[in-house]
Image (tube, rainbow, N blue to C red; front, side):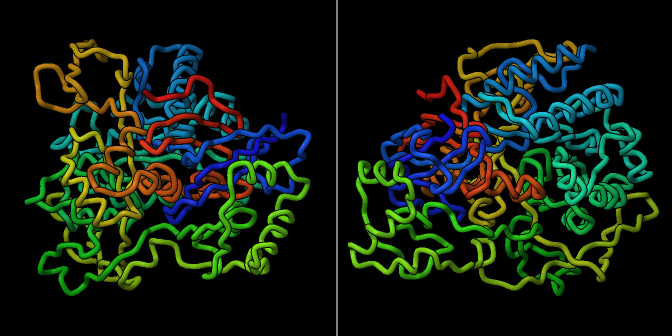
Length: 545
């Protein structure tokens, strides 16, 4: 059938609240969420969700591989590489990741220049025409080689690079066409969507500020990471266009040398030279205020929605009643009749107001911290001198919630400092496979890694070598470590990554709204994944133990 009606379901709203039991319609041909009136009863399949939680599909913006696929492993065969990427897409969809940003770590230029065009081509194809049962690659994340030799993690130090010539060095490393970007308007005119590009860079390396500025001008999402930067250098990176921090707490200075760790805090610790220039800060990207009201508040039971009038429609409906309404010729009209029978004012059902999203309800002003100059010192390092003509805005931060890379208490502190900016990532590598046993395994270039429980180390060392964390487990861990509801933790793997990616992604993913992609996950009340949909088509083989 062309349409699906998911009934008796609790829908996650952009505010982090859940609806009361309601229903949602999907056009499986177009792969999008639709208004109930657009579906035909005779061509609608009804799915009883049994009171479970429906969220947008998970979005992983940093994943290096999974299920025996290493995205940085180039073997010289384009079709072979595409085949491995496709297998990874299939496996990710089964664990609730419906879209992701394939991530490459530090490599030689020839590897970047071979692999980047392949990933971009696959992403552009899948963005325009998602494949059933497969997660959609949204673009590419280049984590290196422009990182600090003092904080390389498991990156090969011999391949690290500087950006003394700014964007020219970036182009020379990745290839002249790797960071090309076309305007959203021109792409929409052609009916196309440009794959997103992310780059992680250390702000203290020579030429970093100019490189960041140049990448921002091309529409690249710049993240700061693998860095030994001072706090002022970190502020400078944000001022020149970076909007994200890569895996907070990992590969950066510790608490006693604040560095990047001060950026997520609303009251950023300041040096004496910065003290008079600091104020509360806000998110760097435009707030996402839905232009259309959520469907469940237009044709559903009582929901404390952020876009409803203060006097909500107060009707409790059984699953059978919801099924009857869903299959009606005009569900909205039928619901209005029920509201009239209950003495409710149905005019309120079609009257909505826009309120500030969560990120703008926090106390404080839109003033933000002054930033350091990008002029270089005699030693060639980025200078810490204040550049008073510019300001910085509070960045998003990604974080690995496996309890290994970051202590649970540290994760809780970061989340509570800036919940609207918290983005869960798996940072997973090829050994991410729940069925994999502990032991020593061969890795790239003759090196070995060891799996011990939930941790992966470079064999014989205490250096963490990526993660084996399924993103869904990260959501459950965040809820447990911070004592927040599971459905609220889901925002950090759906809404928040959508916001940092911006552009067409923010117009199609990360929220359950009319016209958005029907990338969906259904969770039980223990936070276990029970069903998933990619572009409106159900993924087979989904079910967590």
